[in-house]
Image: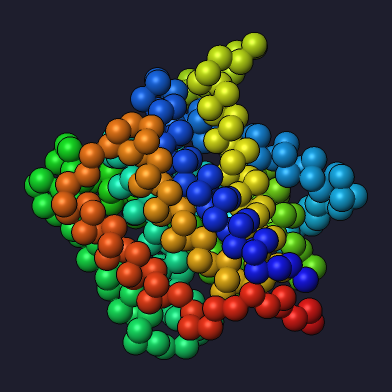
Amino acid sequence: MITPLKAWTILIIFGGVWGVTFSLARFLVQSGAHPLGLNLWVAIIGSVALGTILFAKRQRLPIDKAHLWFYLVCAVTGTVIPGTLLFYAAGRVPAGVLAIALAMVPMMTFLGALYFRLESNDGRRILGVVLGLISIIMIAAPETSLPDPNSRIWVVIAVLASLLYCIENIFIAIKKPLDTDAFTILCGMQILATIMMLPVVFVTDSFVVISWPYDFKDAVLIAMALINIFSYGAFIYLVDTCGPVFASQMAYVITLAGVLWGILIFSESHSVWIWAALLLMMAGLFLVRPRKLSIVKPRRY
């Protein structure tokens, strides 16, 4: 069984590294890379990396009608649309603000789970969602909260991306095929996302060329895609070995790390509204988390 020290080490390291992707996305967009082309490369690199993992494990990717439909919905709600929206937003709002907005995912997921009766009604957790919504309002409403008041619409778009990730989470919880693990799901959805995005990128002439030998921008793109995949893999590992309750705490680390990386890389300076919103969002995440937090290997049924 995994030790508490190892579990916390994985959660903190990978959550902290995952938080840098907001800054990397901002750098790539501001360097002139098109959001559609960037999202395509994330899907391609993810497909190759996960396909290699499945091959090494000698694990087959199911491609029957039911699985293909499942991959398709996950690809649309978990990669194609939200990934593109976030790349567009990354070029227009600070990385730290983007990290705070994405912290709405676990809160929206709780509301979705409540609607589908996957979770029981809990006043404490609903209060956490309310605090998260107030946090977003504190970012988007005041004239002085953001460096550019015209970028407020992109905060709303980032929250829309969070909603789509929430839909993906709930869909997986309800419709996940039997005997299909998370790595298989992720690989299938990345392949479908690649197939769907290729014609869009071709028609819009938004392909991002990776040169050889790699320049710095290309290295950042590849690193960002690999960080996304392997951080997600670490999250899956924690769910499998410690349970989803413990693993859900990675949201705290990602949010805080996203803000700190933005300060380190871009010297981002936030208004008092943003810092207050961060505090409210962290409080909301604390309240939304399930009550029991322990490192216990989940049962196998």
